[in-house]
Image (tube, rainbow, N blue to C red; front, side, top):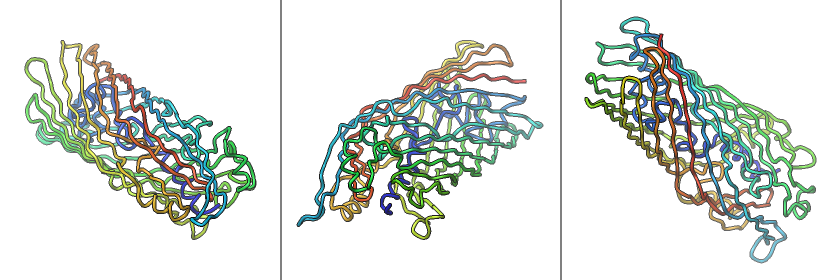
Length: 470
């Protein structure tokens, strides 16, 4: 098993296990509250109509004069479709111009390969005295499942991935003259990732490839990875109550660098080959820091407006490196790929209408810049040309992260049962542009090349929450 194969196999594990699909830039999740969803999360770090503000701004607990609980769940139903071709290149000898390949192409279309999921959250805001308060937030920052059919011709590049994360965030806040509030939190992130990549079932070139590998790899597991890990980070925030109807907020969440440790195995050959023989491995994910700004104003005629801005520092997600201790010097570190993500912004605008003391209606719009870079990965193209003689274009955007700019349209509302109990609901539709995807894998000279792109990138989100003040 050569080093080039290992690079692409571990790349699939690393990128696939954190791909977010259609929800937000890169693989970041916005879904922290039902009321926020109805506003497209505009000024979500500022408004504070329930305790869910703690996910975005630790200063938010200063807004509550009684113990307040919020618990909710969001159902995410993404749909990502791709259409294209997979071409297999089998080396058949050496000619005067270099390696001679036998080519075999298959249609490679897949529909709805980003799985649906439920995303829960829970929050507690608690006053200590007139000046101090504390809070506890539990929610998720990243996660999804993607699942290609086992018969998809491109399972060598991307097949099944799963990422579960949990953020536990205790916070403290101080209120200054009932006008300014500042807060800070410690953030504990747990991440659990699973990945499996395989040769496709009904593999059209299995018999031919058997002559190179010594066995027919049809349906064989290329890589099976399971790992988890913790990381600790922090966040700070401030709230300015300009007057009774106007409020501004700012918050900053520091970066995460969780180190995922787990087991790596493969049955790419009749006998497992080091270092993928149920070996231990680890990989660090350089997740971004974020800056969020919000402005909220309620007019005298029962209307309110909210503006939101979020900057996500995806530029620190430059490359991936894996460590497989049993592999020796050649795999510590093992360079995988330069991702070269771009930092980006999210802009949101929302309105609210307070129909009466019980019913509030809200709606919103957001534009979310993608993190995956447009254009072509020239370094990958040159490396492929040098190793195989094949001159194939390779995009930065991949099947595992078909990231693109997105737009959100949202609507929602709140029903206030009494002074203690209220219920929120939100609904959103997201869509993105179709994007070109050209991706390659090289396994011991056997090259798999995907040439296609997304034909649909959209998602439907439904959220509900209950709020209770003691």
